[in-house]
Length: 392
Image (cartoon, rainbow, N blue to C red):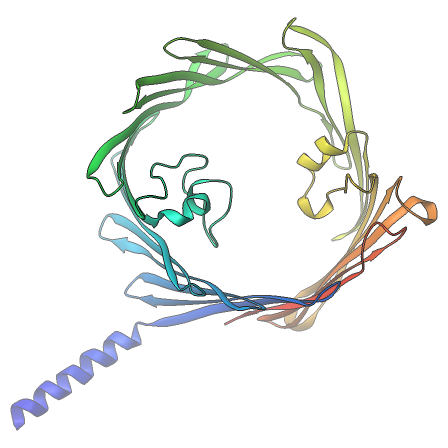
C-alpha cells in the first residue's frame, strides 16, 4: 500500500511539473459579409508550448462548416531545428498531406532533410499555384507523382557551405525510392566590376544532364536603365535572355513606374515607357493622402498593393486614397482607409467605386474590422463586411 501511494505521489508530482511547463496562446479571426451575399470565413488557431516545442492546431470555418484542419509542431531538439506539419480536409473527411523538415548548422555547414507524404488528389494544392491552406505550394509547377498511385513521398537532402548549395531529391510513388533530381546552386559569386552572378546546375533521372543556368547578372546602362542577363545551356540548346529594368524615380512622396522599350529580336532599346505614378502626402503621423494614376493598368497592378488594384473590366485608371488614425482603447490606435476609384466606366466625375476599411481596437487583444464598397455607375455591387481578431 505504501509503495502504491509513493508511486501515485510521484506520478502526480511529475504530472504537475510537466503541465506547469505548458503555455497556451491562440487567435480567432472571422469575417462576415452581409452584402452582396451572406458569407462567413473564420480561423481559430491554438498554440501549446511544451518543453520548448510549439504545437499549433488551426481550424478554418466557412458557411458550410469546418473546411480545413492543420497541425504544426515546431521547435529544437539539441542542435537540430524540427518542423512537422499535417493537413486534413474534414468535410470529406480525408488526410491531405504532411511534411517533416529538420536542419542542422555547424561551423558554416548547413545540413537539411525534408520528408513529404501526400495524397496525390492534392497535387495541385501542394505542387502548383493553388495554395494548400495555410501553407503551400511545396514546389511550384513540379509534380513528382501522378494521381495514380494514390500517395506519394519525397525526400530532399541539402547541404550548404556558402556560396554553394547541393540538393538531392528522391521520390517514391509507391514503387520504391528513386532518384528524381540533383540541383547545385551558387549564390552571389563575384564576376568583376562589382557584378555578381548566380549559377544553377540541374540533373534529372529522366534525362541526365538537364541544364546549367547563370542568372543575376545586372549590367547598368544609363538613366536608371540596366539589363538583367540570363544564360541557359541545355544539351541541344543555348538561351540568352536580356531583360531591361528601369529603376524608376522615387523620393519621399513621388514615385514613377516604367520600363525600357526593348526589341528582343533586334536588340534595340528605343526609349522608356511610363506605366504610372504615385504622389503621397503625409499630413501628420499616420494621416496621409495618396494619388495614383495608371497609364498601363496591368503593369501598375503588379507593383501596387493588391488591396489598391484597379479593375481592368471597369476601365479604372485613377485612385485617391486617404488614411487617418487616432488613439483607441488600451493604448492601441484605430485606423481608417478610404479609397476612391475613377475610370471610363464610372458615373459622377467618372467615379466607379468607393471602399473603406476600419480597424478599431476594443481591448488590448480584441480588434473589430469593418469594410465595405459602394459601386457608382453600375460596375460594382454594394458590399458590407465586418469581422474581428481576438488573441489570447
